[in-house]
Image (cartoon, rainbow over all chains, first blue to last red; front, side, top):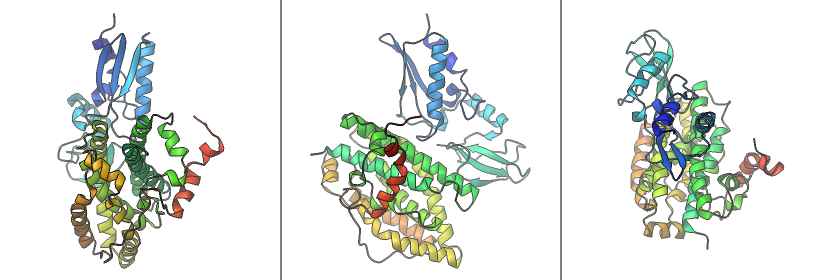
Length: 151
Length: 251
């Protein structure tokens, strides 16, 4: 018999389509897994409303369920409460940094360069390669890097 | 009579859709790479917001039309966006001025909608306002940077402000549709938000060394759908051509 914990562990193995070092669970987009009237209800929340990854995420969850022979499930899109970078797990902060993306900070800017650790940083643009990131550069090692915007 | 909530959801959705499409016209042609990425990201936010607003509109109307049908199969007279967002992009300064004036209103109306008695409208507003906060930070910075820039950029920004200012009044015009929703606690009274808007705009324009036009004359007719400018039809021919030429096409 499948349990909610089983499903959570499957979802924890699905990489984010844009930032493959962190999982959907790390990202905080899985809001609930419940068994209701014979159906598994998986509630997902979008990071940004227009993020093209949202649809890919739903497809990978669907594939993960079908691969395990589960067909009695439904994926629900839940927008309230709105997703926040506070839901990104502490463990994922370290994984992001190792991958070269500065994790979000309450101060609103990266704490240090993910390449060399220096703190003399400059914003290049509020926007980056995906809706959730901004472009920054390190004035010490002169390398550009992505910063995961606080939202 | 058409339901007021449906009408208002179309206004919100159509504003996002038309402005998002306008911004997407810059994709690949912005002045510098970073701005191209920024403007395309902003366009993407607006299209995402459109899916939420028109999605809810379709759900409420429950007449068999989807959000895509509403976006791609209505004609100009059925659109409910304000006139400001359908104005052509012009130069980069025109686009940024249009964006700033819209964002300054958008943030205020969304904060008000977060308190809506309609929980689904409130949920969408709470989601969207977080993205829009980023929009206004950028558009305000650029209006200041370009207004208080070179003689040429200053002149272009002043010309943009003079041309677009007559479209500001429509955002704060309360008609019977909105009156009904205000009375039911579903939307804020936008007329009450004008003071905050003016304060924000006055501060930005002062820093940008730009002068607000003396007249508050306002073009009306976009959100009621009575009198769109000729620009909307041209935009729709491009945005909708695929669904018009190949009805029901999917990928």
